[in-house]
Length: 498
Image (tube, rainbow, N blue to C red; front, top):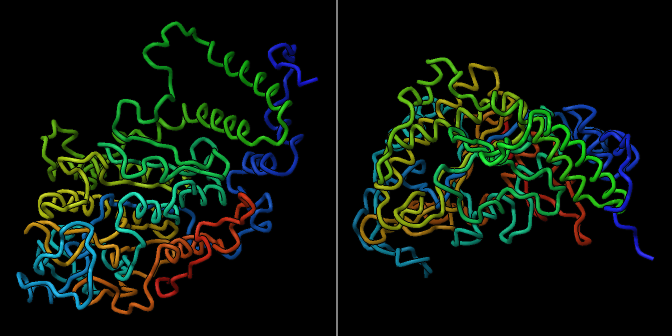
């Protein structure tokens, strides 16, 4: 005989509470979830996943990642190459056979903007990233990053999940799994996508994959009419009576319990329950956290929001980018200070033409100009705001993109893909500011020291280290393999540590 249908079972008049159910479920994910419920700061450390405590004292408590989708040009933003200025217009000669993604092996091409030094460190920044000059001594640059692919989708996955193939958790998912949220009413991992749409791979960049589903990134769109989709009943829910929603929740809890009784050890229902419970709590917490208009005028001005949203032109422009990116930066600060562990802020989407991303094959100046200025103004404001609130010292800031762009020209005004070298930079909790670790060659084509490049595994290992986690010991067994964010690679970048 098979299991009786749950639809023919009598509904219990006094169903188990969530806490009782988790206690009875015992170890495994039930115990992990219970640990998170019992204390907002215990997370997996309390459940034993991190041997009862963090692996070492942390320097930081939270992370924000700024991801420039489409491949931002290191040569036109941060990595100044005088040789390109000197050789501008001359035939490019790489000294080796080069396979370009497209036909991007034209003459050498100088940066589209002039560079000049900033701060005590004298770091060279281009005119479109000049707003970062106010905080440049807090930044640590990596100019010898290398990728494995010149294809946007696989390269983006590599930077966001540590693997080129889909099906692996995003970095924020691992941090959520390890540490949980400091606020039971908000997710541990929040994603703020570009206002025009998703980058390559969409939700695969922040999906929990084989980790418990509640560790997936929660998408929030600051400034939208409904920043969190489906958090409140939509226009078609007019028939709902006051008080009917709690009754619906109670009925769902009973049905979920009946379902769980028939499927012991099935983590999917447990994750769904956690998601629904979080959504219910977010109905109170999220509107307050995302109320950007409650910020005082001087903060609005700092982020470039004082003029409010405009009727944006069809072409990408500086005013639009300053406002929308500033919105995401301010929302990120508000979420982080309320206990969110990991916030991912995206710039650029994957919707083709006209360009609304950093993939500047046709015209670097047209595309990078507004995007870079908006990015630089927003992040400079964000760092200054964190400092004045005492949050900078324990917040890790990571700026990245999927790969760089070629020092040779494409069609006269564009640059082709360059997975052979690009730039990341970090700042904040535990990071030594005003330094550069790793250089590119005279052209910005490959690492200067080709035998010792920096890879995304090293950056991820460093992030986890600063959070108090040994990247080799944060694992999850899947299909017989102890998986981790850094795969079988990764070294902590000690030269970046304060």
